Length: 392
Image: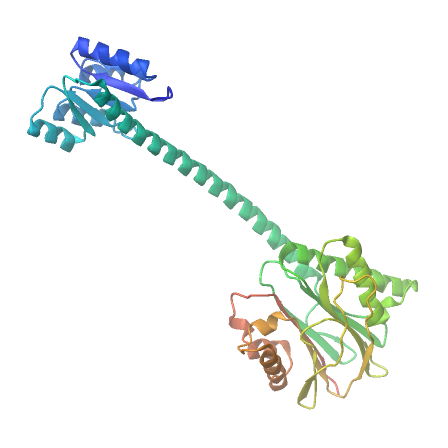
């Protein structure tokens, strides 16, 4: 019946009844304490906290007991065991807080056992619920601490990632580069860079790593490190891969496969030759295609190529695009399509093209045109790079 967990308090001035009841309940495995009266229990209160009280008690006794045990939670149930069998006595006891009422003498001890078992079950349920609550609160506390630590790590990672990005409104030889980036999480899988390679060549790339979060952001660190190495190699004249977008994509592909991260990316890489006014570029399945605008007319660039980081020996075609005076080139990640209100993908692409054509191609104007300033929750990372000739 019991697992040596519950303490029972018997309060009864009848020594014979108390002795028999104590022997019976002790044989059931309970820890039993006997007091002749409520006043007697007052002296023992500091030594024992009963789980259940059973006794020959009046309504006033019940109230006195609960006053003595007001700081005990849960409040121990009281089972009245009395010769008083009148309806008023029973109702009075129950109204005062008694949980059950057994009339003396008990002809069948099973009646007593069942009454106590009912109260034991309630005590155990309460105790289990309290333990569940404690465990849940502890788990929530640990979860909050873990989340706070994770958010701190994510904020630090975002700070590092933002520091890796190029400066805004940078101008090389009359061509201005600018950008905006809006991660859907703390960290972004979208990444880009632009830099001058020599007096007449400017390189840039735009990458969208598969997935979100820290693992995707780690690939952007790898990408930044590789492009920096290739720039150093060019200065040392040990490698000129950075001058050729197709070879650059192959290098990124090889590095990504070597990491075995299970990540791939879409990518657009280009080199502008200021002397010949020629843009050479390669595509690594980048989508949507970059938008070229000349004299108020916008169109998507042509080109294709496989994703970066999926295949062992991919081929990235090299394309060339003459740069007309006053040109502008807008490159964006596919997250921008997610915030365009259109039904089909084709309609979204057309809306993107029209929006770019109607805007002035500066980052502030593009942010305004696409409503990015007012969006608080993003389904995907959004990044835009604007390249435009400022001196014609």
